[in-house]
Amino acid sequence: MSKTHQIATKGVRAGQARTEFQEHSEALFLTSSFVFKNARQAAARFAGEDQGMVYTRYTNPTVGMFQERLAALEGGESCVGTASGMSAILTTALVHLRSGDHLVCSNAVFGATIQLFNNILSRFGIETTYVSPTKVEEWERAVRPNTKLFFLETPSNPLTEVSDIAALSRVAKKAKALLAVDNVFCTPALQRPLELGADLVIHSATKYLDGQGRVIAGAVVGPKALVGEPMTAFLRTAGPTLSPFNAWVVLKGMETLELRMLAQSAAALELARWLEAHPAVARVFYPGLESHPQHALAKRQQRAGGSVVSFEVKGGRTAAWHVIDSTRLLSVTANLGDVKTTIIHPASTTHGRISPQARAAAGISDGMIRVAVGLEAVSDLEDDLERGLS
Ligand SMILES: Cc1ncc(COP(=O)(O)O)c(C=O)c1O
Image (cartoon, rainbow, N blue to C red; front, side, top):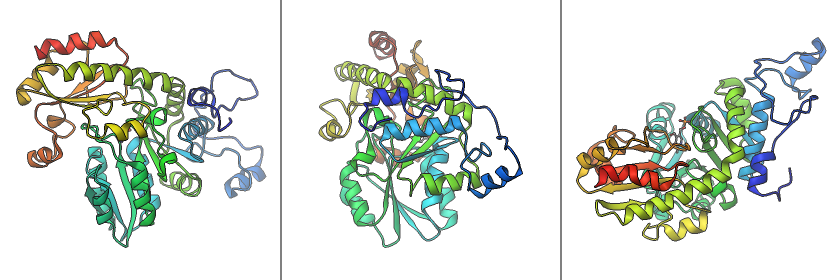
């Protein structure tokens, strides 16, 4: 696959490896192990002298196709598939950090990421400092001699704050730390962090890469020296490998990635504008709106705003729950990245375990609702929300 091919082409074609049967659609290799011709070949494979397949915890042709396709989309040299988005973050941390290291993390990342850093990595002597996703100077001030990793998610969840990847990559380089960007909300169809200076891109492929809410999967993309070589060795030994079935589902999902991301972003912008004009709505958070504090940066860094729109209704939690409970079409679920629109009340669910004070400091009010826009007609989504808003 040529590097000059467009995203649409790479999404459909990159990584395909046909078998002797010349199947048109990518094959699913549901096998835990591979057969050797003889004892000599088995020994050579185990010694790494022969590059063929051994065991699916190490390598699998379907997982290989998934990895190549995602690497091509992100513009990265290599990619490893992992069992989930969380295991992609864990793999990144365990491969690139050791006891005594320090990491700087945006304070607006996925809740389980914060728990992983605070409750698990801390037990192995790795310390985390949390800083604002939008204030570059806070990242500069947080750097210590032992800082090895910067970690962020942009746009953030649920406030859709946008971090300046290029500016933070300059700070990370000066500190000799790696910059890892969780690209779940935008996907490579809208944003390519490696081109902006990030060292590693992390995915929960569970979300938009699959696009239809079917499987749990994850990935890390970046240079061979940071991803392909050390992470493949880690996965082979530690085992949070991506299952071939899940890899195949996401591989096929990526064929429609660009179409979905552009259509869902256009629908999200339309819905965000409608919400912004609604008298029952106090505030709308969407990077594609001119009123968004980082709108100019988002326009530079992203091809479109993405599908997540958060908004604050007047009347606090009672009013927010009323809007959610009045919907008949939208799915009340914590997941996002699906072609079916989802709705959730962050303060009592995804962000319910943080103290009310911390939530308020983070700007997640009791009246806030997060919608991840799918592919239904926007007028139908508006009608569904209007029932509870009016
Ligand atoms: C931004 C982000 N990163 C990582 C994850 C974790 O991914 P997974 O659920 O696939 O482990 C999620 C899950 O919601 C997420 O939203």
